[in-house]
Image (cartoon, rainbow, N blue to C red; front, side, top):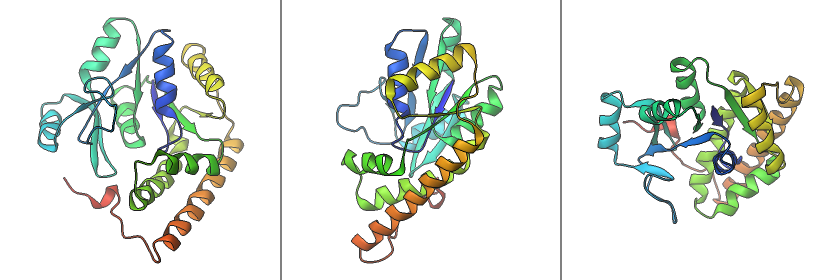
Length: 223
């Protein structure tokens, strides 16, 4: 199963709860060139490596998917999926939209789940509250989020992360029993509201900076 969402929507928390409940889900730890945040552990939160090491993994065919996000590389080691399948477990991938598209190509029967936050206000406040990103970094994440929201129609189901316990239970049910998730009209309205919220937040950031923010998004960063 793939969980994807805009940054700050809570997909990693959902993934950790599913794995922690010991109901057959196993977390697929990603490789990344991002530096560890305080408290993150090698091999548990991520496999941390430099760009040269990551590119070598790509060349050797060791990644089921990979993407450059916010200027850093992230990817899913193939061995994660193989080991989970051998144990009869549900491999759970906490990845971005680009990675989800690659998994769709390589693993056609994977279930792709997109997680939406309940409102733009709560979502953006959560991003600001992390305290780990400067204004320029926050602007990059918000702009990337707009592109990610455009891809919601590519996913099998969409869930609303309003109440964590209910969301975890729904995702577990979707994997085991199937289901439709949010309806198309509800998704369309919510995505529209989230985009409007992002636009207002970016305007606020520009006012704080006293002019347009000069940031480099994922598409501006080469290998």
